Every structure is written in C-alpha cells, then in structure tokens.
Length: 202
Ligand code: GAR
Image (cartoon, rainbow, N blue to C red):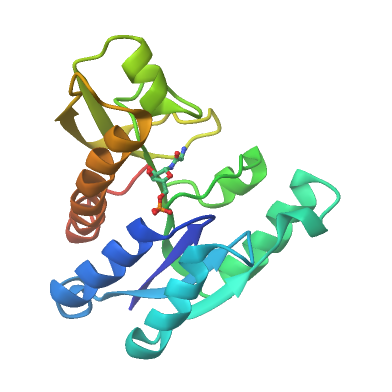
C-alpha cells in the first residue's frame, strides 16, 4: 500500500477534499494508496480537529509538530521528518502548510513532495496572492499544483485551474472561488500521480 501523508497548518479544507476523494474514488482499490496520516505544525489548526473527526471513519493517524517549540528551522524540519517517516510515505502532500521547508527536508522527499498554491505560478509566489492578483488588474485568478523544489512556490507544474476575477471581487470572495477549484484540482492531480507510476516526480 502506498502511504500518503498530508501536512496542514490551517483550515484543512484541501486535506478533507483529498480524504473524501480517496474514499469516493476508491484509491486503495485502484492505486493501492491510502491517506495514512495528517500532520499539523499548529495544535490549534481547524484542519487538525477536522482530521481527528475523519480519523475514526478513515483510519487516518494525526500528529502535531509545533514549530514554535523548536529553536531553528532545521530542528523543526528534523522533528517533522520523524513524524512523517513514521508512516513511510510514498507521497507527501502540502495542503495549506505554511512553513518554508529547509533544502534538507525538500531533498529527503525529492520526487514525492507536492504543494498547492493559490495563483497561476510562476505569477504571485508567496503570500496575499488574491489581493495581488486584484491589484494587478488580473482578469483571471488561478491555483497551481506543483512539485516542490528548494525555491519557494516554484517547481514543475502538475496541474492548474483558472477562475474569473469579477469587478467587485475582494480578496476573500476571490479566495473562496479559487478554493472551490482547489478542492477539485488537488485530488485529481494526486490521482494522476498515483495512476502513472512511470511518471515519477523528479
Ligand atoms: C489554500 O488556499 C492553499 O492553496 C493555500 O492555503 C490555503 C489552505 O486552505 N496555500 C498556500 O498559500 C501555500 N503557499 P485549507 O487549509 O483550507 O486547505
């Protein structure tokens, strides 16, 4: 069985969408894959409560590695890797995981580390993507699923979706429209990765 580990920091709606898709689309049967664990860097993350609720029904482990308890980024990443490796992941999925990872961590999971970012990468890496898209006068906004490399919000693109930017959009309304697309796109991109074992991420 290929284990998938999901890292979150916040609301966890992408994580929940992936868990539901795995169940609905029978990933275990079709791809020999399952969501093994959800790990958060914040004990108070809404997504963690959601993951705990899903844990019983789906047999998913949950863990917290609070970044604030570690003196350096390297020390945190080392503890995070330990929590992740306990589940021997074939794929590590960043779903609203809002920490910059060290090159050592990224290298450890090279070829099996993916992220979702709410913009049409390579445009608008970093934070506040929706406000920046509105301020730039963009007519469409987007979401990108990509392989993670040591450069923040870069790396080969696996999938993208676009939505219109409407004249009266705020960052919040635009984020909601993009998030609905995220919930479709991320499970689809992961299923694509799982279904094509010859297409290993490099
Ligand atoms: C999502 O919009 C995701 O694309 C974004 O955080 C949100 C998490 O929502 N990720 C990034 O900005 C990463 N650079 P969720 O916790 O409800 O899935």
